Image 1 (tube, rainbow, N blue to C red):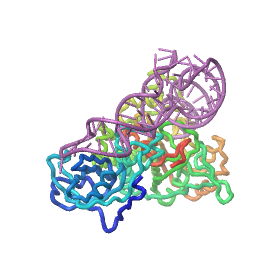
Image 2 (image 1 turned 60 degrees about the horizontal axis):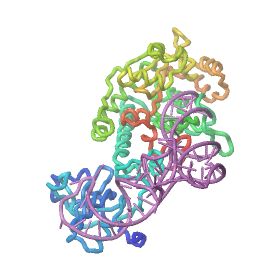
Image 3 (image 1 turned 90 degrees about the vertical axis):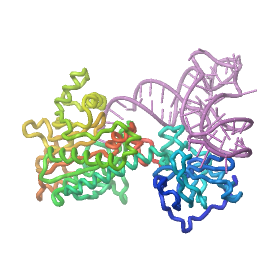
Image 4 (image 1 turned 120 degrees about the vertical axis):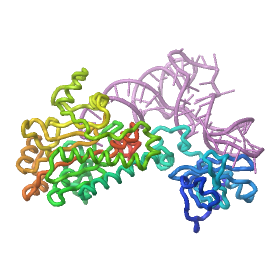
Amino acid sequence: MSWANMKLDELGDWRRTHFSNQITADKDGEPTTIFGWVDEVRDLGGIIFIILKDREGKVQITINKRDFHKDRLNDIRKLTRESVIGVKGIIKRSVIAKSGVEVIPTDIKILNVAKTPLPIDTSGKISANLEKRLDMRVLDLRIKERIYIFKIKNTLINAIREYLQNHGFMEVFTPKILATATEGGAALFSVNYFGRSAFLAQSPQLYKEALTSSFEKVYEISQFYRAEEFDTSYHLNEFISVDIEMAFAERQDVMSILEQLIIYALEKVTANNENELKFLNPNFKIPTAPFKILTYKEAIEILRSKGFDISMGEDIPVSGNKLIGNEVNGPYFIIDWPLSLKPFYIKPKKENPELSESFDLNWSWLEIASGGTRIHIKEQLIERLNKLGLNPEKFEPFLTYYDYGMPPHAGWGMGLQRLLMIVTNVNDIREVTLFPRDKRRLIP
RNA sequence: GCCCAGGUGGUGUAGCCCGGUCUAACAUCCGAGCCUGUCGAGCUCGGGCCCCGGGUUCAAAUCCCGGCCUGGGCGCCA
């Protein structure tokens, strides 16, 4: 309406001096410049309260009618939710304001005006369903709880990098556009690569293994792609994987790194995101080492003893993981999986080649990570490929490397979002993904 | 891909079984107004909805069929 003709203010030389959480009563009398989005305008006639929010929280702006020109006052009164404003003013301790502090403005800039009505409620009173929220994701991300999730995610990623760097791992970036599958198993998205057929990487597997023969200890944090038509709350077609691979190591070495890494990262989260965690998952406890270790055989026995219909050699479905997850508090490893359930590059167990030098890390009902000792002898790899009906010729570019000094190595891959789901206590992986890609969603 | 549940204002729900009293209700929201201490502000007035197509019937938000979309479970997979 009148907003269409309204002249917006320029940012000019205004720059932020405080985030909302830095407006504290002990700064009584200090000048401040703050920016943010209008959460609410409470117009009581002679006095107007604007609740301004930024990524760190909310602060109350208290406007006395006498302090502003009538025209300006009218503009302010009509500010819509989620409009963008800047406020210059004085921080004032207040016994009346609930937070104990408010800002008395000397000047206000209206930088942008949001249309009404909003497509989703951003006040937190009535939560739209996930589908609608994802359609309007950027608006959705102005809701406190959402920001909390991604602040924790940020801490997690940072801490993971820090831990791996401190332990001698080099960060690598492997190609996401490939000529052929790197694992077999999951379906791949095809890409037209200048007329040639190519695929989106499902994992960095073969690359990270190859890189152990020069960098020895490598890691990658990146998005990968699976073309499976998943329809679950814990799968995405584009997901973030944390991968490590390490030369001169076996399963137990990388299991221990995984365990220590998770504890380290979660300690960082509890230290840096105390408020966020308290809000999202008040009962969260950092697990303690060592994590429980079950063999696959033991896991199956537990399930069978509970009347769960499963036989040796079968993969454990989510419903089975739920049962075991209820038994075990916190994360737990399942090791020694049947070789038939694992990909070709996993090393068979010496004592029993029906089993593998593998492990999964589960937490509650979710599979968080999986890994193991890899085969580093070319002939054994080819033998495994053949057994699984995969054509070794397709893997030739990689197999060649095994001719020239591939060290024994081990590693794992972890689903970052799955770990985040557990930490933030959400039940849909899309909640912890900024712009999720699933079977249906390609936008935004 | 299979099974089950559902689609009602911008958002979230009620109504549907047992068709008419639905001119569709409630909250939030949006708009106009009152109020100098609100903080889930309050008050007055106003606004806005039955997924699409077909059928049954005197009559369909309500029953039936098809489609599309969504949620849950399973499968495939990490």
